[in-house]
Length: 235
Image (cartoon, rainbow, N blue to C red; front, side, top):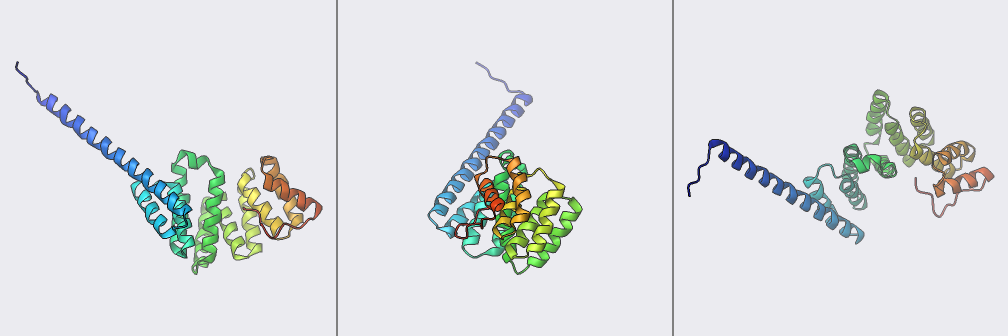
């Protein structure tokens, strides 16, 4: 029996082999990434933060769009006192979020990342420069999320007037963002500005009547009951 291969046959064979090798490489990369992230979460839950940071660093090298691993990496650096790297990691989580469908739609997670990034920037020795850069960016892009982040920085730093201004500008640009209204209302109620908190909490409650923290804060603010000091509501 005689076999003959044309140049076309050989090219097709080589192309098929090349594509199979690429697919095998992608499969290994996905597998390595998933394993590294699982290891990181396990180590994080054991409070082994330096080891967890190593695992999450591997995960984001394998997949530079892994928002969750960037977030956990920021949490690890936060807990080990590396504020600079925490800022970098939280910012990477926020920047990669729009490229992952699940994370792009998860506004609760987005608000958590903004909260953690804002708190980290508020502790930074370069806070003023960070704020100036972000203010320019917010003005240029007219972004409610940039103003939301500014509000969280100022709130974490104890600058109530600047936080109120940034929150109001964020709401002016997007009055239907539940997380912005929620964060603003809970923060106002927590710092004792109940009269200002009530309309913001009412709006947040209208946007999402199922949020228990907003409903509880609204009841307290409406009757003038102080917010509990032992367990401040998360925002």
